[in-house]
Length: 604
Picture 1 (cartoon, helix red, strand yellow):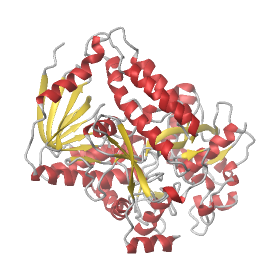
Picture 2: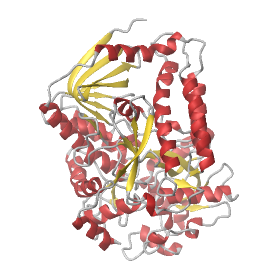
Picture 3: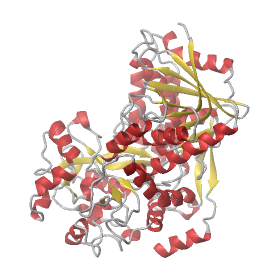
Picture 4: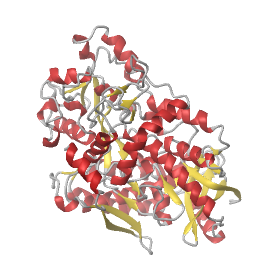
């Protein structure tokens, strides 16, 4: 089987064409360097389009009490203070300009009566902060970035998957990839590389993520020598579809709750009033009427408990299901139809504000959400952890390798607030592109070692030499079941120990997977190549989760249900040892600057 290589040269190579990758490519191209953009699927089919609710930025268009300082402290509080505070500061300060920039590039946001960008409520945000386009905000963002990006001279490589990164003299040198249609290998030589490949949701059985999210970026960065951080913090979005089975896990935007949707158990009771954390009681309504006034924009009302942070809402839903108060298909009810009691023309309002949700349930589940509650339950949605980066430049511990968006760690700490993902990718996609271009201009090109390239291509082709080996789909299925059952929303020591043992067996099976046929149009081969990445990120998640003997944010341990001060001053990191093994370590969180610490204290 031939392994001929097509070689491409770029100053900056961006891997991933969602919001972060597009914004990085635009910024790098604007700096005058040559840019290549690789996407695993088709351009436009990015997970950014799943971010339906809005982009968080303290524009203060709906409530003038909002500011970057409030957004900064909300982000830290949501992240349980494990955030990279420098990233949280930059994010809160720069997000408004990034949203206005997007508007200038043609994004059509919903408007206030006086023509400003409209903002809605969302979980964990003190004030209405999410600029939105109905419930299709991410789609509008991708459209705008693509329309702007096509004029920048970016070389786009669609349906191309990166399998390895190469270094030379201690810095990044290039990447090996293959085109998914024909199976031909491509060698990209680059002075700087930006990883913007998103998350790891396909490591779990129930997920809102589609097939692309197999942890490729985190894995190739790890194997090249970059450090991963906060891998124990996986966010389970509280509301995914639970029926019919074919669409289980598909996202139901938090915007439904932001527009007045309430969560009820099988007894018809709003169970979220049962468990409000002490640190949110002063901000959270203790009766339905006050929560409704908040939805309608009353500045003196407190927010409804359905808009608490995602980790808390997900655990409350799981409690109702576990205690026998769930819906017939293992979830709970999300009811926005009830607002007809409070609002004239409620059905028209719902269809206008939540058009995607209305059509999604109508077409996939034959449910009219203007009259009938939705059945929802937690779904694996987002990875707070990822590649450890510098807060200002987004460069990883490997010189020349940058990361942005969901593939990077730091901004969100232990738990991400809804809407912060879109402003994250705008702010830090731009920064990653800017500093990658600077790095590329400051360094000469280098060529990956020919022997390493040959070894990587042979490893990628190895499954064809084992046509009677393990079925890659079976290994993937067993991995997803193991992670869902043993390292899911609620974690326990003995179950995670079993997961460690199970992962070792799965690694042995993955080393023996075989595929038949040739390299053209071969999804079995693609699945076999994804397994290495899925196993790498799964091992990092389990190792970090075992070490964190407390509950914090997206990481909840039944055997250690409380937060512990002993785990509040550092982040867990994983790095590749010289022998290829995974090493777990700690990185202390540096002291916050005095003026920022004062802001946090005042906001408490």
